[in-house]
Image (cartoon, rainbow, N blue to C red; front, side, top):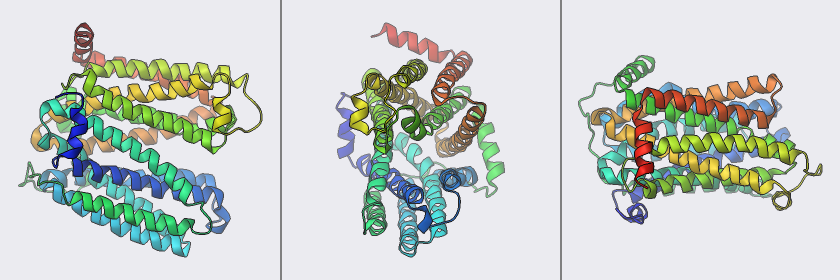
Length: 441
Protein backbone atom coordinates (compact mmCIF):
# COMPACT_ATOMS: atom_id res chain seq x y z
CA UNK A 1 0.00 0.00 0.00
CA UNK A 2 1.42 3.39 -0.98
CA UNK A 3 1.77 6.27 1.45
CA UNK A 4 -1.44 7.76 0.06
CA UNK A 5 -3.25 4.53 0.87
CA UNK A 6 -4.17 5.47 4.42
CA UNK A 7 -5.96 8.58 3.14
CA UNK A 8 -7.68 6.66 0.35
CA UNK A 9 -9.33 4.55 3.08
CA UNK A 10 -11.49 7.57 3.89
CA UNK A 11 -13.28 7.14 0.56
CA UNK A 12 -14.01 3.45 1.07
CA UNK A 13 -17.18 2.26 2.78
CA UNK A 14 -15.31 -0.24 4.96
CA UNK A 15 -13.44 2.63 6.68
CA UNK A 16 -14.84 6.08 5.86
CA UNK A 17 -18.21 5.92 7.70
CA UNK A 18 -16.55 4.28 10.69
CA UNK A 19 -13.85 6.99 10.77
CA UNK A 20 -16.37 9.84 10.76
CA UNK A 21 -18.53 8.10 13.36
CA UNK A 22 -15.63 7.88 15.80
CA UNK A 23 -14.36 11.37 14.88
CA UNK A 24 -17.65 13.08 15.68
CA UNK A 25 -17.96 11.04 18.88
CA UNK A 26 -14.62 12.31 20.19
CA UNK A 27 -15.34 15.81 18.85
CA UNK A 28 -18.78 16.08 20.47
CA UNK A 29 -17.53 14.66 23.79
CA UNK A 30 -15.06 17.50 24.04
CA UNK A 31 -17.34 20.27 22.75
CA UNK A 32 -19.73 19.40 25.58
CA UNK A 33 -17.19 18.80 28.37
CA UNK A 34 -15.12 21.88 27.56
CA UNK A 35 -18.19 24.10 27.34
CA UNK A 36 -19.31 22.89 30.76
CA UNK A 37 -15.87 23.37 32.35
CA UNK A 38 -15.57 26.81 30.75
CA UNK A 39 -18.95 28.05 31.97
CA UNK A 40 -18.26 26.72 35.48
CA UNK A 41 -14.85 28.40 35.57
CA UNK A 42 -15.89 31.81 34.23
CA UNK A 43 -19.56 32.07 35.24
CA UNK A 44 -19.66 29.94 38.39
CA UNK A 45 -21.92 32.17 40.51
CA UNK A 46 -24.86 31.73 38.12
CA UNK A 47 -24.60 27.94 38.30
CA UNK A 48 -23.39 26.74 41.69
CA UNK A 49 -21.97 27.68 45.08
CA UNK A 50 -19.60 24.70 45.05
CA UNK A 51 -15.86 25.17 44.81
CA UNK A 52 -14.89 25.59 41.14
CA UNK A 53 -11.60 23.75 41.58
CA UNK A 54 -13.44 20.76 43.02
CA UNK A 55 -15.87 20.68 40.08
CA UNK A 56 -13.08 21.01 37.52
CA UNK A 57 -11.51 17.85 38.93
CA UNK A 58 -14.79 16.04 39.66
CA UNK A 59 -16.25 16.32 36.16
CA UNK A 60 -13.33 14.63 34.29
CA UNK A 61 -13.32 11.96 37.00
CA UNK A 62 -17.02 11.26 36.50
CA UNK A 63 -16.43 10.96 32.76
CA UNK A 64 -13.82 8.24 33.40
CA UNK A 65 -15.98 6.37 35.95
CA UNK A 66 -18.05 4.39 33.38
CA UNK A 67 -14.83 3.03 31.85
CA UNK A 68 -14.08 1.33 35.17
CA UNK A 69 -17.65 0.15 35.77
CA UNK A 70 -18.85 -0.92 32.32
CA UNK A 71 -15.83 -1.70 30.09
CA UNK A 72 -16.10 -5.42 30.84
CA UNK A 73 -19.70 -5.47 29.62
CA UNK A 74 -18.99 -3.32 26.56
CA UNK A 75 -16.22 -5.68 25.46
CA UNK A 76 -18.58 -8.66 25.66
CA UNK A 77 -21.28 -6.80 23.70
CA UNK A 78 -18.79 -5.93 20.93
CA UNK A 79 -17.69 -9.59 20.61
CA UNK A 80 -21.26 -10.95 20.74
CA UNK A 81 -23.12 -8.49 18.48
CA UNK A 82 -22.57 -6.95 15.06
CA UNK A 83 -20.28 -3.94 15.55
CA UNK A 84 -22.04 -1.81 12.94
CA UNK A 85 -25.32 -2.30 14.77
CA UNK A 86 -23.65 -1.51 18.09
CA UNK A 87 -22.21 1.70 16.67
CA UNK A 88 -25.68 2.84 15.60
CA UNK A 89 -27.17 2.04 19.00
CA UNK A 90 -24.37 3.97 20.74
CA UNK A 91 -24.96 6.96 18.45
CA UNK A 92 -28.68 6.93 19.26
CA UNK A 93 -27.71 6.93 22.94
CA UNK A 94 -25.52 9.98 22.28
CA UNK A 95 -28.46 11.83 20.71
CA UNK A 96 -30.59 11.09 23.77
CA UNK A 97 -27.84 12.27 26.13
CA UNK A 98 -27.41 15.52 24.21
CA UNK A 99 -31.17 16.15 24.33
CA UNK A 100 -31.07 15.71 28.11
CA UNK A 101 -28.03 18.02 28.26
CA UNK A 102 -29.89 20.63 26.18
CA UNK A 103 -32.59 20.70 28.84
CA UNK A 104 -29.86 21.20 31.45
CA UNK A 105 -28.36 24.10 29.50
CA UNK A 106 -31.72 25.78 29.03
CA UNK A 107 -32.78 25.40 32.68
CA UNK A 108 -29.34 26.18 34.17
CA UNK A 109 -29.42 22.82 35.95
CA UNK A 110 -25.82 21.88 36.68
CA UNK A 111 -26.60 18.38 37.94
CA UNK A 112 -28.44 17.42 34.76
CA UNK A 113 -25.32 18.46 32.87
CA UNK A 114 -23.11 16.46 35.25
CA UNK A 115 -25.37 13.45 34.67
CA UNK A 116 -24.91 14.00 30.92
CA UNK A 117 -21.12 13.92 31.45
CA UNK A 118 -21.50 10.48 33.01
CA UNK A 119 -23.74 9.52 30.10
CA UNK A 120 -21.11 10.59 27.58
CA UNK A 121 -18.56 8.59 29.52
CA UNK A 122 -20.85 5.57 29.12
CA UNK A 123 -21.17 6.37 25.40
CA UNK A 124 -17.38 6.33 25.01
CA UNK A 125 -17.09 3.18 27.12
CA UNK A 126 -19.51 1.29 24.87
CA UNK A 127 -17.89 2.53 21.67
CA UNK A 128 -14.25 1.96 22.70
CA UNK A 129 -14.06 -1.81 22.11
CA UNK A 130 -16.02 -1.43 18.85
CA UNK A 131 -13.58 1.25 17.71
CA UNK A 132 -10.45 -0.92 17.76
CA UNK A 133 -11.97 -4.39 17.27
CA UNK A 134 -13.69 -3.19 14.06
CA UNK A 135 -10.45 -2.51 12.17
CA UNK A 136 -9.01 -6.07 12.00
CA UNK A 137 -12.30 -7.31 10.52
CA UNK A 138 -12.26 -4.83 7.60
CA UNK A 139 -8.62 -3.94 6.97
CA UNK A 140 -5.87 -6.12 5.58
CA UNK A 141 -2.88 -6.75 7.83
CA UNK A 142 -0.74 -4.33 5.80
CA UNK A 143 -3.43 -1.65 6.21
CA UNK A 144 -3.69 -1.87 10.00
CA UNK A 145 -0.85 0.56 10.77
CA UNK A 146 -2.26 3.14 8.36
CA UNK A 147 -5.82 2.58 9.58
CA UNK A 148 -4.86 2.86 13.25
CA UNK A 149 -2.84 5.96 12.43
CA UNK A 150 -5.87 7.57 10.82
CA UNK A 151 -8.06 6.68 13.80
CA UNK A 152 -5.55 8.11 16.31
CA UNK A 153 -5.11 11.24 14.20
CA UNK A 154 -8.87 11.65 13.94
CA UNK A 155 -9.36 11.13 17.67
CA UNK A 156 -6.82 13.73 18.76
CA UNK A 157 -7.83 16.25 16.09
CA UNK A 158 -11.45 15.74 17.17
CA UNK A 159 -10.50 16.29 20.80
CA UNK A 160 -8.57 19.45 19.97
CA UNK A 161 -11.22 20.98 17.70
CA UNK A 162 -13.94 20.05 20.20
CA UNK A 163 -12.13 21.73 23.07
CA UNK A 164 -11.55 24.89 21.04
CA UNK A 165 -15.11 25.08 19.70
CA UNK A 166 -16.68 24.30 23.08
CA UNK A 167 -14.69 27.05 24.80
CA UNK A 168 -15.50 29.57 22.06
CA UNK A 169 -19.22 28.89 21.57
CA UNK A 170 -20.32 28.84 25.19
CA UNK A 171 -19.04 32.37 25.93
CA UNK A 172 -20.85 33.97 22.96
CA UNK A 173 -23.36 36.35 24.55
CA UNK A 174 -26.31 36.12 24.70
CA UNK A 175 -26.73 32.87 22.75
CA UNK A 176 -23.82 30.80 24.03
CA UNK A 177 -25.89 28.18 25.85
CA UNK A 178 -28.30 27.81 22.95
CA UNK A 179 -25.39 27.42 20.52
CA UNK A 180 -23.85 24.65 22.63
CA UNK A 181 -27.17 22.85 23.14
CA UNK A 182 -28.03 22.96 19.44
CA UNK A 183 -24.59 22.17 18.10
CA UNK A 184 -24.01 19.13 20.31
CA UNK A 185 -27.35 17.65 19.20
CA UNK A 186 -26.43 18.40 15.56
CA UNK A 187 -23.00 16.74 15.89
CA UNK A 188 -24.60 13.68 17.51
CA UNK A 189 -27.02 13.45 14.57
CA UNK A 190 -24.13 13.70 12.09
CA UNK A 191 -22.33 10.87 13.90
CA UNK A 192 -25.48 8.74 13.85
CA UNK A 193 -25.93 9.41 10.13
CA UNK A 194 -22.35 8.32 9.46
CA UNK A 195 -22.84 5.16 11.52
CA UNK A 196 -25.75 4.08 9.30
CA UNK A 197 -23.29 3.61 6.41
CA UNK A 198 -20.91 1.33 8.36
CA UNK A 199 -20.97 -2.09 6.63
CA UNK A 200 -22.11 -5.23 8.49
CA UNK A 201 -19.45 -6.53 10.85
CA UNK A 202 -20.37 -10.04 12.00
CA UNK A 203 -19.85 -10.90 15.67
CA UNK A 204 -16.78 -13.11 16.21
CA UNK A 205 -18.39 -14.83 19.23
CA UNK A 206 -22.19 -14.77 18.73
CA UNK A 207 -22.73 -17.59 21.23
CA UNK A 208 -20.89 -15.78 24.02
CA UNK A 209 -22.71 -15.91 27.34
CA UNK A 210 -22.70 -12.42 28.91
CA UNK A 211 -21.15 -12.24 32.36
CA UNK A 212 -23.01 -9.39 34.06
CA UNK A 213 -20.53 -9.18 36.95
CA UNK A 214 -18.09 -6.48 35.75
CA UNK A 215 -15.42 -7.17 38.36
CA UNK A 216 -15.31 -10.91 37.73
CA UNK A 217 -15.31 -10.39 33.96
CA UNK A 218 -12.55 -7.78 34.17
CA UNK A 219 -10.32 -10.10 36.16
CA UNK A 220 -11.08 -12.96 33.76
CA UNK A 221 -10.17 -10.79 30.75
CA UNK A 222 -6.91 -9.63 32.31
CA UNK A 223 -5.98 -13.20 33.26
CA UNK A 224 -6.75 -14.31 29.69
CA UNK A 225 -4.61 -11.48 28.26
CA UNK A 226 -1.68 -12.29 30.57
CA UNK A 227 -1.39 -15.67 28.88
CA UNK A 228 -0.23 -13.81 25.77
CA UNK A 229 2.78 -11.94 27.14
CA UNK A 230 3.46 -9.59 24.18
CA UNK A 231 -0.23 -8.59 24.03
CA UNK A 232 -0.48 -8.00 27.78
CA UNK A 233 2.69 -5.90 27.88
CA UNK A 234 1.45 -3.96 24.85
CA UNK A 235 -1.73 -3.24 26.85
CA UNK A 236 0.39 -1.99 29.77
CA UNK A 237 2.52 0.07 27.39
CA UNK A 238 -0.59 1.65 25.94
CA UNK A 239 -1.94 2.44 29.41
CA UNK A 240 1.41 3.92 30.36
CA UNK A 241 1.12 6.35 27.45
CA UNK A 242 -2.22 7.53 28.83
CA UNK A 243 -0.54 8.01 32.22
CA UNK A 244 2.24 10.04 30.57
CA UNK A 245 -0.21 12.11 28.51
CA UNK A 246 -2.60 12.68 31.40
CA UNK A 247 0.07 13.88 33.81
CA UNK A 248 1.64 16.23 31.24
CA UNK A 249 -1.55 17.65 29.73
CA UNK A 250 -3.14 18.21 33.14
CA UNK A 251 -0.31 20.63 33.97
CA UNK A 252 -0.65 22.71 30.80
CA UNK A 253 -3.26 25.25 32.06
CA UNK A 254 -1.28 26.24 35.17
CA UNK A 255 2.04 25.83 33.33
CA UNK A 256 0.89 28.29 30.65
CA UNK A 257 -0.34 30.80 33.24
CA UNK A 258 2.30 30.63 35.98
CA UNK A 259 5.47 29.59 34.15
CA UNK A 260 4.97 31.02 30.67
CA UNK A 261 2.98 34.04 31.95
CA UNK A 262 0.41 33.41 29.23
CA UNK A 263 -3.36 33.72 29.00
CA UNK A 264 -5.81 31.01 27.88
CA UNK A 265 -4.66 31.29 24.26
CA UNK A 266 -1.15 30.12 25.27
CA UNK A 267 -2.65 27.01 26.87
CA UNK A 268 -4.62 26.35 23.65
CA UNK A 269 -1.42 26.78 21.63
CA UNK A 270 0.42 24.18 23.75
CA UNK A 271 -2.49 21.77 23.42
CA UNK A 272 -2.63 22.39 19.66
CA UNK A 273 1.06 21.57 19.20
CA UNK A 274 0.73 18.35 21.22
CA UNK A 275 -2.44 17.24 19.39
CA UNK A 276 -1.03 18.10 15.98
CA UNK A 277 2.08 16.10 16.90
CA UNK A 278 0.02 13.05 17.86
CA UNK A 279 -1.82 13.23 14.55
CA UNK A 280 1.38 13.68 12.53
CA UNK A 281 3.19 10.88 14.36
CA UNK A 282 0.23 8.54 13.93
CA UNK A 283 0.15 9.16 10.18
CA UNK A 284 3.94 8.92 9.93
CA UNK A 285 3.83 5.34 11.25
CA UNK A 286 2.47 4.07 7.94
CA UNK A 287 5.39 5.54 6.02
CA UNK A 288 8.10 4.52 8.46
CA UNK A 289 6.79 0.97 8.79
CA UNK A 290 6.29 0.54 5.03
CA UNK A 291 2.73 -0.61 5.72
CA UNK A 292 3.83 -3.45 8.02
CA UNK A 293 2.94 -3.97 11.67
CA UNK A 294 6.34 -2.69 12.82
CA UNK A 295 6.74 -2.82 16.59
CA UNK A 296 10.31 -1.58 16.19
CA UNK A 297 8.83 1.92 16.13
CA UNK A 298 7.73 1.57 19.76
CA UNK A 299 11.26 1.92 21.25
CA UNK A 300 11.83 4.91 18.93
CA UNK A 301 8.67 6.52 20.25
CA UNK A 302 9.64 5.81 23.86
CA UNK A 303 13.05 7.42 23.33
CA UNK A 304 11.44 10.55 21.93
CA UNK A 305 8.97 10.77 24.83
CA UNK A 306 11.87 10.72 27.28
CA UNK A 307 14.27 13.00 25.37
CA UNK A 308 11.77 15.74 24.58
CA UNK A 309 9.93 15.42 27.88
CA UNK A 310 13.24 16.07 29.61
CA UNK A 311 14.07 18.90 27.21
CA UNK A 312 10.71 20.52 28.02
CA UNK A 313 11.94 20.70 31.62
CA UNK A 314 15.23 22.31 30.51
CA UNK A 315 13.48 24.72 28.13
CA UNK A 316 11.02 25.75 30.86
CA UNK A 317 13.82 26.53 33.32
CA UNK A 318 15.57 28.67 30.73
CA UNK A 319 12.35 30.48 29.78
CA UNK A 320 11.36 31.21 33.38
CA UNK A 321 14.42 33.36 33.87
CA UNK A 322 13.75 35.68 30.94
CA UNK A 323 9.97 35.78 30.59
CA UNK A 324 7.85 38.86 31.12
CA UNK A 325 5.97 39.21 34.38
CA UNK A 326 3.03 40.71 32.44
CA UNK A 327 0.36 38.29 31.16
CA UNK A 328 0.79 37.78 27.40
CA UNK A 329 -1.31 36.19 24.66
CA UNK A 330 -0.14 33.53 22.22
CA UNK A 331 1.35 36.11 19.84
CA UNK A 332 3.31 37.73 22.64
CA UNK A 333 4.45 34.30 23.81
CA UNK A 334 5.75 33.27 20.38
CA UNK A 335 7.77 36.51 20.28
CA UNK A 336 9.58 35.56 23.51
CA UNK A 337 13.07 34.11 23.35
CA UNK A 338 12.89 30.40 24.17
CA UNK A 339 9.20 29.97 23.30
CA UNK A 340 9.82 28.12 20.03
CA UNK A 341 11.89 25.50 21.85
CA UNK A 342 8.99 24.85 24.23
CA UNK A 343 6.52 24.59 21.35
CA UNK A 344 8.87 22.27 19.46
CA UNK A 345 9.17 20.03 22.51
CA UNK A 346 5.36 19.81 22.78
CA UNK A 347 5.13 19.00 19.07
CA UNK A 348 7.82 16.31 19.22
CA UNK A 349 6.38 14.73 22.37
CA UNK A 350 3.16 14.35 20.36
CA UNK A 351 4.92 12.99 17.25
CA UNK A 352 6.89 10.38 19.19
CA UNK A 353 3.75 9.56 21.18
CA UNK A 354 2.02 8.70 17.89
CA UNK A 355 4.98 6.53 16.84
CA UNK A 356 4.75 4.79 20.21
CA UNK A 357 1.04 4.07 20.49
CA UNK A 358 -0.09 3.15 16.95
CA UNK A 359 2.11 0.02 16.61
CA UNK A 360 0.99 -1.13 20.06
CA UNK A 361 -2.65 -1.06 18.93
CA UNK A 362 -1.76 -2.97 15.76
CA UNK A 363 0.16 -5.58 17.78
CA UNK A 364 -2.85 -6.17 20.05
CA UNK A 365 -5.21 -6.43 17.08
CA UNK A 366 -3.07 -8.92 15.14
CA UNK A 367 -1.81 -11.16 17.96
CA UNK A 368 -4.91 -11.37 20.11
CA UNK A 369 -7.42 -14.21 19.76
CA UNK A 370 -9.80 -12.94 17.00
CA UNK A 371 -12.81 -13.94 19.11
CA UNK A 372 -11.50 -11.98 22.07
CA UNK A 373 -10.30 -8.69 20.54
CA UNK A 374 -13.10 -6.46 21.85
CA UNK A 375 -12.88 -7.90 25.35
CA UNK A 376 -9.10 -7.39 25.32
CA UNK A 377 -9.58 -3.75 24.26
CA UNK A 378 -12.18 -3.36 27.03
CA UNK A 379 -9.70 -4.69 29.58
CA UNK A 380 -7.13 -2.23 28.29
CA UNK A 381 -9.64 0.61 28.63
CA UNK A 382 -10.04 -0.25 32.30
CA UNK A 383 -6.27 -0.18 32.70
CA UNK A 384 -6.17 3.17 30.87
CA UNK A 385 -8.73 4.64 33.26
CA UNK A 386 -6.84 3.37 36.31
CA UNK A 387 -3.54 4.72 34.96
CA UNK A 388 -5.12 8.13 34.29
CA UNK A 389 -6.52 8.29 37.81
CA UNK A 390 -3.09 7.27 39.11
CA UNK A 391 -1.53 10.06 37.06
CA UNK A 392 -3.77 12.62 38.75
CA UNK A 393 -2.91 11.23 42.19
CA UNK A 394 0.83 11.19 41.44
CA UNK A 395 0.70 14.78 40.19
CA UNK A 396 -1.14 15.87 43.33
CA UNK A 397 1.44 14.16 45.56
CA UNK A 398 4.37 15.68 43.65
CA UNK A 399 2.86 19.16 43.87
CA UNK A 400 2.22 18.73 47.59
CA UNK A 401 5.87 17.69 47.99
CA UNK A 402 6.90 21.01 46.48
CA UNK A 403 7.77 19.90 42.95
CA UNK A 404 7.43 22.52 40.26
CA UNK A 405 5.55 21.70 37.04
CA UNK A 406 8.79 21.60 34.98
CA UNK A 407 10.15 19.13 37.53
CA UNK A 408 7.03 16.99 37.03
CA UNK A 409 7.81 16.98 33.29
CA UNK A 410 11.35 15.85 34.07
CA UNK A 411 10.32 13.11 36.50
CA UNK A 412 7.72 11.81 34.05
CA UNK A 413 10.33 11.65 31.29
CA UNK A 414 12.74 9.72 33.51
CA UNK A 415 10.00 7.37 34.69
CA UNK A 416 9.06 6.80 31.03
CA UNK A 417 12.60 5.58 30.34
CA UNK A 418 12.41 3.12 33.26
CA UNK A 419 9.00 1.79 32.19
CA UNK A 420 10.18 1.38 28.59
CA UNK A 421 13.29 -0.51 29.69
CA UNK A 422 11.16 -2.83 31.82
CA UNK A 423 8.70 -3.60 28.99
CA UNK A 424 11.35 -4.01 26.30
CA UNK A 425 13.48 -6.19 28.54
CA UNK A 426 10.48 -8.44 29.21
CA UNK A 427 9.76 -8.68 25.46
CA UNK A 428 13.15 -8.40 23.64
CA UNK A 429 11.31 -8.56 20.31
CA UNK A 430 10.75 -4.80 20.59
CA UNK A 431 14.51 -4.17 20.66
CA UNK A 432 15.23 -6.74 17.95
CA UNK A 433 12.67 -5.24 15.61
CA UNK A 434 13.99 -1.73 16.35
CA UNK A 435 17.52 -2.79 15.38
CA UNK A 436 16.18 -4.54 12.26
CA UNK A 437 14.15 -1.44 11.37
CA UNK A 438 17.22 0.78 11.70
CA UNK A 439 19.29 -1.62 9.59
CA UNK A 440 16.65 -1.55 6.88
CA UNK A 441 16.52 2.23 6.59
